[in-house]
Length: 254
Length: 153
Image 1 (cartoon, rainbow over the protein chains, first blue to last red):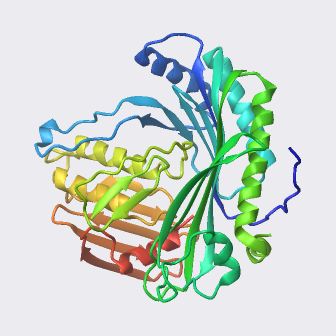
Image 2: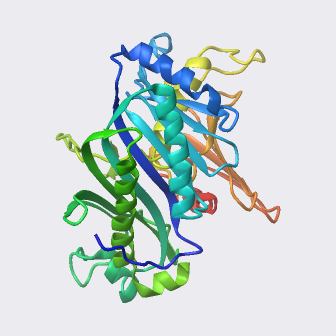
Image 3: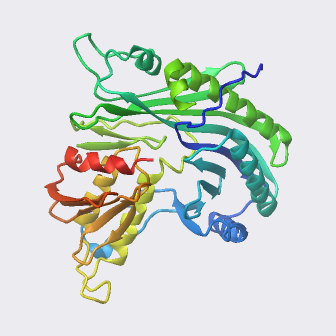
């Protein structure tokens, strides 16, 4: 795959950029023992990320009788954060996610920190078999509203969808596509969304959510091929993003 | 109003409730930012568990009711998607409150009671104060929603 050179955006409109690695553990533990192992594994990280949230697998159900209302979710892992820090880590039963929240710095910053913490995950939890890799970037792009007449911005952001007729004005949209990128073998989940904005507003937020992912087999936690694939997914993400936003938005965020 | 949660983290608001349920099956990678609705649901449940009895705070705090918790959950689903995570906490009068501090240090507070009344207040960076109250009918009123966007990421 030929790598393209894309401009670095000093004010990149990124809300969250993440690297996600899903895996199977080598040992066959019960769920409760696995969660206990995760709890032990995150202890060394608490000095750097003291805010720890348990991630639950199920929704909570409310009961009319207060005495019957209870937390019914099952713990699946932990989210680690720090006050004022743009990083967040998820240590889960089925894998690891490293996130950089706003303000985004660079791919180098994200990938190097993710690699460092992935090594901690693997070292503490033992032999793992990687099953899925992903790079996901969630962007927030601001465009003038109403949308009609802003051809440069909306033409790129809204392809191929348009308003139902020339006489109607779009006030909100959500769409999701999943496509296959033949050059990398990855799938690209692409969500475009704009919530309805207050009357009289002249700027609208459009979310561009690009999730590049692929299942893999035969890769261990220490295999360099994991990071080579992730690097390729970042390039796919760039292709999708820069094809979508057009020249005037690139200039705005440079 | 019907709220449908998608696996990617987005919440779809359907204005006309259907007897058919949509099953979303598309997979996605776990986003901390989009998990905020799940995070808020979890916090609301914890508040309900901890504060469901009168005097939960040792100072005569009024019990938080399941109705308040259910309304708070609907509000969580109705928030503008570009907002950062709020702090959630119970109030002595039995309400559940959402609080944001924006980058310019403006502060926003939104609270809900068991009658569906939402009270909002804001202290903007220039010291200006705003407050009001509305009834929550499934979506946030625009004059509540608009100032909150100052707390967007």
